[in-house]
Structure formats: structure tokens, C-alpha cells
Image (tube, rainbow, N blue to C red):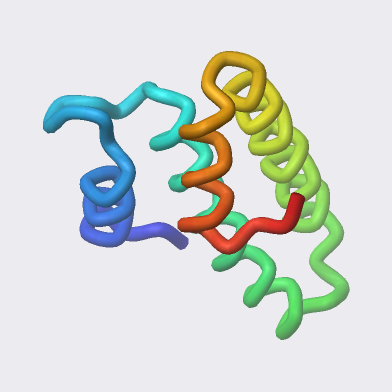
Length: 88
């Protein structure tokens, strides 16, 4: 589970300005953090099918946000993918 402190740090690291919480960069960063934590959970609990479904939904949502950002601003997309360590 993503704690308030971890979420705030993730938002602070990728925000465009200090009160930014809705930009694609922030949303992708938070989703990536949640995906990583849920993936660790699923490695320990491989029979948890409900969480697996949620994970797939988050991955699809992140993919949509990345596709939007790539269309709007290729430079920000490339820097975000590099920062988060996502493969293209």
C-alpha cells in the first residue's frame, strides 16, 4: 500500500509546480509506484487474483497516460520514461 509520505514524495519529485497533482507526469509516477508495490505483493501471494486484476487495470491506465503525454510533449515523455526506468 502506498503511504501518504511515499505518495507525497513521488508527487514532489515529478510535479511541474508545487501544487501539481493532476499532470500526466505525476499520475504516471504515482501509478508506477503503486504498480511496483503491488507487483511485490503478488510475488508473495501468487493466488491473489483480485489484486492481479487491479494491477492489470493500473498498467493499462499508466499506458494510456504515457500515450497521451507522448502525443502532447515528446521531450517530457522521454525524460519521464528515463527517470522511471520504464522500457519503451
